[in-house]
Length: 88
Image (cartoon, rainbow, N blue to C red):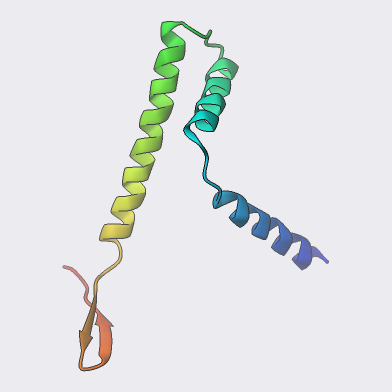
């Protein structure tokens, strides 16, 4: 029973991770986050908070891209066989 519950929870997390958020939904969530930090709408602190959230999101995206690009060695095919080429 416990394995079934864990499997269902993991499946729900994976499905939720595949959804795409619209810019409007993202902005609404970011606004709620900044408001929960105590910033007032229309203030400089609120605008800085929104900007920092967006910059953090972009930095995380760049880091994820770099990890995919540089941590996976290229696959080289030789006569129908392949092997990983390791960089030094």
